[in-house]
Each structure stands twice: as structure tokens, then as C-alpha cells.
Amino acid sequence: MSIKYPIYMTILLRDYPSISSGRKNMNEHHKRILKTKKLIKKFVLKNISKQRT
Image (cartoon, rainbow, N blue to C red; front, side):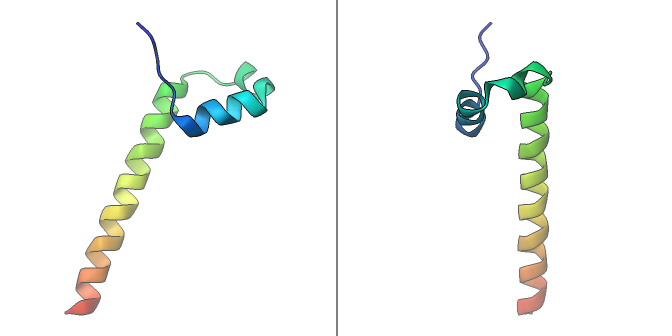
């Protein structure tokens, strides 16, 4: 099973290869970041709609 890392992570690993030595579960960290971004977007959209009414 191959793991495809997101573009931002591949750029970070290419520019700073030493950070990968202490990082484990990069896939889970990426999922957490995506979940956080989704929650923030939902929160912002909800609050914008409240302000308009």
C-alpha cells in the first residue's frame, strides 16, 4: 500500500528532510489538519449567514 503525501508535505520534506526523522503518523496528522480546516470553514460560513440576517 503506497501513501501519497499532500503537496505541502512533500515540499516540506524535500526542503527540510531532517523533520521526517521525528514525525510519525503523517497521514493521521494530515487528516486532522483537513478536519480542522473543514470545521473552521463551517463555523465561518455559519457566522457570516447569521450576520447577514
